[in-house]
Length: 307
Image 1: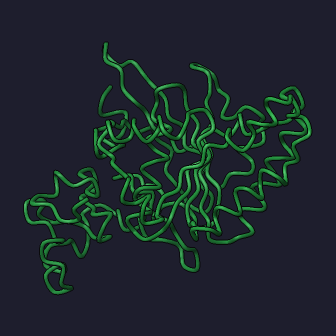
Image 2 (image 1 turned 135 degrees about the horizontal axis):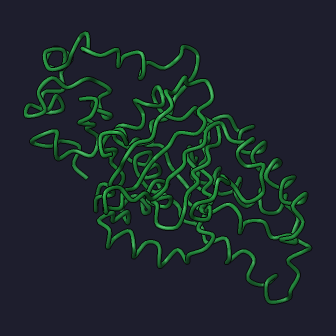
């Protein structure tokens, strides 16, 4: 992937809504003259706003003493005051087809390009099918996988023998957590995606208490590492007000982002809503986004502009 583009409009790191470059963390004055083509401090200072017309600096300036991890989604980091809190857990909830997997993969790929290795736990889909789908979408990550920047794990492989023996109830949460931690250490991962979280519960599906204790132990173990930022995805039924299956994921997460589909004037739009963002005074609002091949999620603007 080339970091330099002839114009900002063609770059996935450029947010047209805020005139902000997520690669260089600067405001772009003229999108026809990308600052990345003149990367010296002197040249960049000539192409960015020193004082934006709107108080956008208050939105994107991180709070001191807190480390932030950029999501790689144009427009979202500005809304989140810089991105996700490093080492914390985030829940991406949404109905089928809303973009949860694209969101998660975009987060991992962006991190891998920034030398922040990532792990994707494929729970519902075989890794081989996932990689083929990504390539068809325009994300050929073979080089990143070969370089050890990305690792895809099919968790069903670890449990296939237990499935055949019908011994699912005997699996201890610590066993699953140890597999995750082992792979994190193996590549020095800084980003982790569990997509989706519910099927990872290999105990009795009716035992909600078991699932909640499993999730608590897993989240606490991951956050104890201090430098691995985690995304858990959760599928919610269309029209439901739920954010998770077990009713505890949202309390463990430092942030919740809801992805939904909405019909407006006969057209279907994808909507993003930041439900929770710890230590980031996010202004309540819903945002329309699109999904583009090879780029992923791009926020188009506030929902009210499309009503």
